[in-house]
Structure formats: structure tokens, C-alpha cells
Length: 191
Image 1 (cartoon, rainbow, N blue to C red):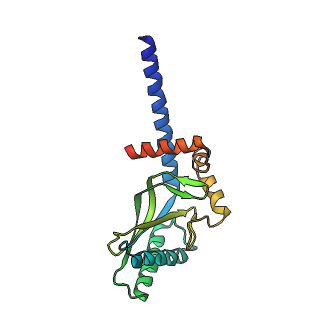
Image 2: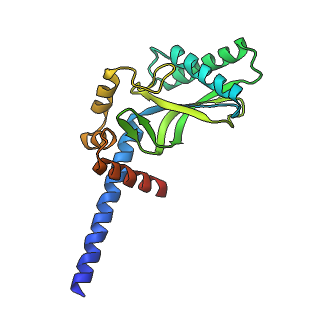
Image 3: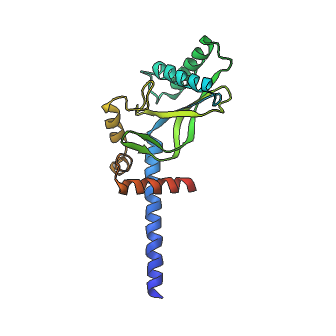
């Protein structure tokens, strides 16, 4: 009986430690990254191509604006999107907002961000019922026309923003870190 109690106690402590680590790593990511999310009007090829053109216009327009200045960033993103839509006689408009949004897992070369709730700027084109596009704006892991590192400085900035253990989990392809990511994803799905 004593062994069963000890085993249950050990398992409970292990589960509590894994849960605490997962929540802590998720918060480290959620509090230090700002993402950009663009939702297309529909899934038609036409609206999907508009979404990508608007993405490029937004990324060009916000270049040099600190995404941490959320009011200016949101205004610049919305203005750039609507300028593109109006110039090209597209019958719907865009609206941008800042908040906390759920994002799925996303890979950037050797970085894998777990699914979770992140701060972000969301740009909704028309009804926003089509497929979406997202990237990390801070630190700047996306560049116009690509889902890639803007430069090596972005990866260094990411490394400096996050705790070492969090960065190690998201930046490696080892099976141990993949298991850690799966645990973080699982814990996030329960929140």
C-alpha cells in the first residue's frame, strides 16, 4: 500500500511539474511575441491572391514602425490594406485590430512555435471567412512575400527575448524537444 501511495505521489508531482513548465514556457512565448494575422474574404483563388498582395503591402507599410506601438501599427496596417483594396477596385474593405488570438503551431526554418494564444494584429479582409496567413512581427521573423527570417538578427533577438529553456525547446529538431512541444500543445489545449 505504501508503494502505491508513493507511486501516486510521484506521478502527481511529475504531472504538476510538467504542467507548470508547459504553462511557464507558453507564457514566455505569448508575452514576448507579437504576431500578424491576415484573414481573406473567401477561399477563392482571387481572394487568396488579394490576401497575399495585401500582406506584402502591409509588410512594406509597417517597415520601420515598432509593432510595440500598437495603435500606430494597427492604423498603418489597416490603411495599407484599404489603400490596396481601393486602388484595385476590390469591393470590400479591411479592418485591423490588436488583441490576444489563438494561433496554430507554426514553423520557421528551425523554429517551431506551439499553438497557443498570442498577442497579435489581425487584419480582416471583407468577411474574413477565407484561409488566413500569419507570421511573427516581433521579433521580425517574416518578410514581404516570404515566411522566413528577415535576417539573422531576428533569430538573435528572439533568443534574447525568451528564457534559454523556452528558446531551446522551440529551436531544435531533437526528439526530446519535439516531445516538449507536444506537451506544451497538449497543456494549451486544456486551457
